[in-house]
Every structure is written in C-alpha cells, then in structure tokens.
Image 1 (cartoon, helix red, strand yellow):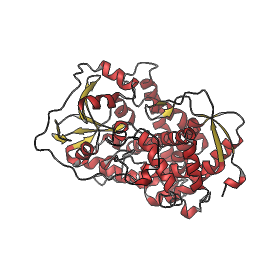
Image 2 (tube, helix red, strand yellow):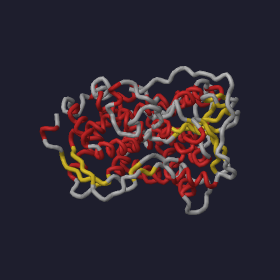
Image 3 (cartoon, one colour):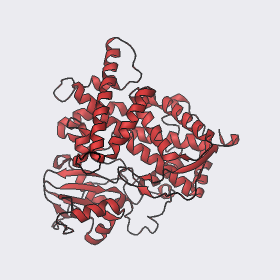
Image 4 (cartoon, rainbow, N blue to C red):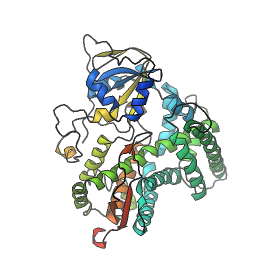
Length: 455
C-alpha cells in the first residue's frame, strides 16, 4: 500500500534556497550521469530542497512528501518542462511540450487510449503476447538476454494492441524507436554520429512511418472498414481546445509520445521486476505460493482484474517494492511560474524543479531497512514514503494504467509457465538513462515450468 499524499503545509518564514555553488555546472553534470548517489549525497548536505547547475541550467532538486505535495498542490503555479533533447525529440506539437488548457485538451484525447474500456479490449491480446514470450523462453536452448525480450514485448503491446501495427511495421518502428529512445537524455548537439543526431534522424523516419499508419487507418475508417485496433480513430477524430479537428502532423506527434508513454517505463519495470525476483529466491518462492492459487490464462472478461491487489496482494507488494527501489523514471520536472515555498524553502519563479524519485523513495528517517528489498513492508501497513513511480499531478504518465496491467499479466504468465535462472558472471548493475535496465541484458537460462505448477 502506498502512503497518501496529504494536504500541503506552509511555513511562516521561508528559508532561502540552498545551493551547491556550482558555476558552469560541468563537473556537476559529469557527476549526475556517473554517480547513482548524486542527488542523495547533496540532499544529505543541503536538505530536502537544493539548487545546483547542470551545463548552465539551474536546477532545483526536491525529495520528501512535504516538498512534493507543495509542488503539486496548485497546477497554476507550475508548468511542464523537459530538457532540450527531450523537447526536440518529442516535437513542438506533442502534448508533453504543451501547458494549460492546450495540454489538458490533448491529454483528454490521448487518454482515451488508456481508459478502462480500452484496457478491457486490449487485455486478450496482451495475454496472447505473454503466451508467445513464454513459449519462446521455454524453448530456448541457449542463454537469453531477458531485458531485450521484455523491451520487445512492451513495444509489441503498444504497437500491436493499441496502434494495430502488423509485424513488418512493428519491426521497422522498433529499430528506429530504440535509436530515438537512446538520444532522449543526451547532449542536444546534432554532431554527426552523436546519439542526439542519430535520434533526430530516427525521429524523422518514425514520423514518416506513423503518418502512413495514420492515413491507412483514416482510409479504412472512411471506407467503413473495421480498424485493427480502436485507438487511431479516437486520436484522428479528437478535438482540440478550439473545437477544431487535430491536423495529421499534430496527431502523429501524439502517436510518437504514445509509443514512449506505453513502452519505455513498462520495459524498465518488467526488467527490474524479473531481476529482483531472480536475485531474491525467497521472495520468488513466497510469491509463487500465492500464484499457485491463481489460474492462467485468465478468462478474457476478467483479465483486467484477475490479478489486481485484492486477488494477488503479494504480487502487488512485490511490484510496489520494485517501483520503490527502481522507479522507471528517476524523476520528473516542473517549472515554477510563480514563487513557491517547498518544504519551507522559497523557490523563485522561473526555476526548473526535479522531483528526485529514486532518492525520495529511499528517504524514510527511522526506517532501518529502507534500503532493503522487502515487499512484505507493503502488507504491514502504509509504505513509509509516498510512491509516484509514474510521476504525479495532472501530468502523470499517460501509460500508467496500461503499464500496471502489462506488469501483472506478464509476471503471472511467466512465473506460471517458465522457470528462469541467472547466468553467473554478468554485470547486473543498472544503467539508469533513459530508464533503469541491467547493463548486461539480464542473461538467463530458461525452461518450461513443471506441469503441476501451471494451474
């Protein structure tokens, strides 16, 4: 269970914003990319709110329930913000780069693809993709890089189930999408051969392919033919805040965001979940005890709720603990449009604020085992920290509901059908940009589970 975000409190006399004293921010930037404990060390030195500079960009880091609550309490005083590389690669029309009514209108349109009714429509196909992956793993004769398979699974869900793409379109998109994703948090210099330059080129190819997919769907809809998936007609027919149909260029940029929202964080969460279980066999056995009483595959009409927290509390606790220790995004950004007081510290208008989720989730004074992977803590009572693994406020990740459904179905399906074993000698440390993933790809040996394990 996650502790609720409570109402904000205000301090009578705000404290000045502490800073690291960084001038250019070059050394801070190098430390940010190289040191997983970058934020934690500075929080210990400066408190729960501090300012530093990364490559000339002033940046305020925050952690703790009070500071985060203060930030999200009034959406009129903050707006969305992304680093320049992300802004350029998402595109100026993307709702991620919009604010206010403009953002909310497009979010309502795109959000239809992740509504409860849409998830019910998607779930049988997700189950089929889980079965396909389990068969592939169970028949593998050599060690498999599981993280890469899970990335393909997550991409297949969003591309096939939501956008209705076939194998050829999906494979072409996947190759370019991986290139695009690697450039998201790179230095925004389009030097030939750089990650950012390659990502810009991949973005152009992605937009061309998505335009073809959109126009194909429009032609099918105009001819009265059923679409392969129910999402594209919702986007194409969406109305913006002025009541005018969205132009194709606008819709295509929303599709690119849609792929990112429904893929990257999910792929990271799946890899980190399987890594945690493989590294903690007692927890895996504890979880399997619960799964032994659950059937697989679920009945199509029950797939969205068959493994929800009420029916699978241990599974929910494991997922919550994975999200706590390895959130799929290390943080999210806002920019202040007015002076704010965050946990008693005055932050001027115009400051970019990063909610440091990874550091926040490991900060619980008085909890001696907060650094330990212990899912049972979520069954003992409220979690000592408020978890926001997909961001918070009105800009919470669009793909959150789909990601949670995928994670539950994938975890149950694989654990019921396949036994996995870590290959020794590999590097299991996490690379964290753009999302956490084991450096050596999470190499596993796999085999089909004994028949009696399958319900």
